[in-house]
Length: 246
Image (tube, rainbow, N blue to C red; front, side, top):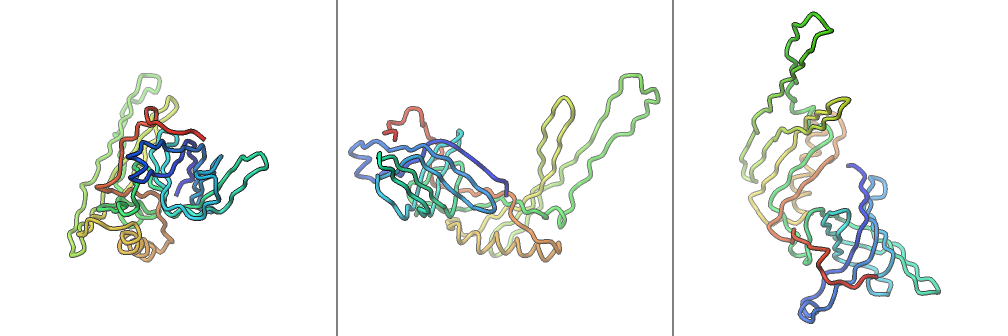
């Protein structure tokens, strides 16, 4: 998967009695990074409680205009200077970008959209056609036309759920050229609509990855993963939320 780096503010979800009492959230500046070598890591310029926390189930964040939930966070490094300044680092099991889950029991999913590194080797992509150009005089104004026809989505219903092959594209036009990229993804909709990440990964995402490795004779990996949930909060007004800044 692609490396990421997001900088912003991070905080712990308030307990119900703290919400009722109107306690402000303590937000700490920090940077979230992901690399295939280091995994998910959060570096904070401060401490949530002023103590050396070892395990934090949920950390919420708003970084580079993205809503982020970090799940399964282990404190791997902490320092407190003589002047009282602290910094911490956490490694996380899961980073969910696009939604806040204040309760770990609500991190449940009913659908997944997955792209694998060599899925296009198993599912043939359509060719992009160029219309013939009959203009012989290259000094005259010419028009080039390319035709792309997106294949229809392929669907299959099994006793485990509905599986779909979806074809799509992305484009970016610049003065010097056009970048047109095709992609294909697998959409997984299990019959059971409330699955943990561990379950949806172990029962569907990983077995499909192993199948593609066998089918393409190439080691496959996940290049993009989108998960869908009925829970969580997608509306976070960070500018108008009262908080205590570290």
